[in-house]
Length: 258
Image (cartoon, rainbow, N blue to C red; front, side, top):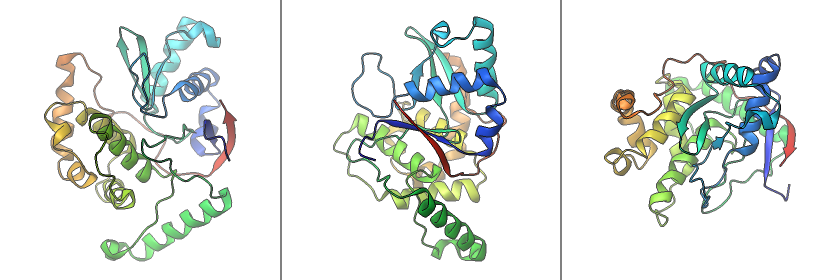
């Protein structure tokens, strides 16, 4: 696909469930289409994954259905929201329903593999993990561009380069392995991991101390406890206690051009 400016809708269990709530699905679709996918300059100073959503009348929702849908998406761990002088800003927490095709500042993740090849690779990886769970340190995995592991690793790298553009690009596959361990071994939810990544890269102290996923995993409990004190500054708390539809990866379904 030559045009990289697209949003992809997954044929996932989460998508099938969310479609049952028409208004919540519409709101999540608007967020996915509007969400920033690069760290390039924008007048609203939005970060990757963020979108302004307060103009609910423009996409056919009433004030009541908008508020109800927003609360449900937050409860289901799809988004977080915050009120700013720019209006209500929503942040996507995962790509279980939509993949907004986050683009690295240095190069774009290769997305040329076919759906069949991606599914085959992910299934092979899953089988390999089951057989070698006791030898996980010796298992070499190749994380797909659309996996949560590589997506979250790329997000951390991009947020670091927003402050230091010449930061040396790491081996993102190695970074993704640490995210994998956090999800499988430490039992962290992907939405919470993303929330902590965003928080620590905005915190004046932690942003210079968390410069890799190894550090992120090592300090995660401390970071989560610190971030929960954000309420004193009027910021949105982490998604630790939110319910979720699940963390299972699914294959892609529909492609939406934007």
